[in-house]
Length: 304
Image (cartoon, rainbow, N blue to C red; front, side, top):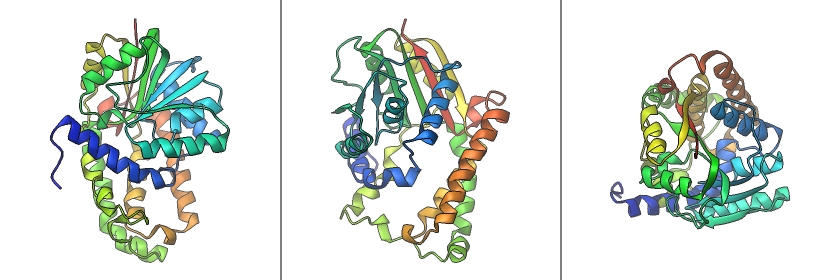
């Protein structure tokens, strides 16, 4: 198919792709609901806010996926209640399964980020992770975030690809594709099934992945979107440089192999190595280098 052109086409492609991706999302991205997950989520929020995590009150997560942010925050007692929104009913189905398994109660809505079924001023915090780059109308979305926030409420988003960081990341991705046959031989792993089949019969929807990421941001673009919607105290920071290069190298390698053939020892190495390099980035590089050079951008702002 051709790339989507209109806002409605972009939303429809994102819904279709993420409905299928939901089936293996947590395992693909190593999402953890426990001490490691809570530490990661809390660390990201504190980094954006520049201070210890305050009580978040009633939160709404935009593009909540399977619940990485909201469920960890509920588990850690960092918020009073959570509203989870996503354009993908499939993602929300997985989220509700995770919530039930963890003994948590959440309110869910399948909706667009620019049209939230929430009353004016009804939440204290708007959060999201790796979602803004999927939204066709960023300005309308930020205006909606402002509408549903109570005065003094905060908006915090992490995991948004930077334009320069995305270009830099092509180097480790390309290198990984080159060495993938040798890596599979070393791992004694067969090639990935055609079209990433997962038994769903939706191979075509897997191919939509190339169309769902529609933005990579300059830090100034995020500041303008928040400022135009009426937010104050806007802070944009960069996150992950070494960890990103390491992570993307491993993800590209793993994507070429049959998942059942990838050894558990490799998976543990990749996960622990990623966490270790996150700590190196945090202690040595973040805050010292320009935000644009990092792969991920994070933004925090306050409603007056």
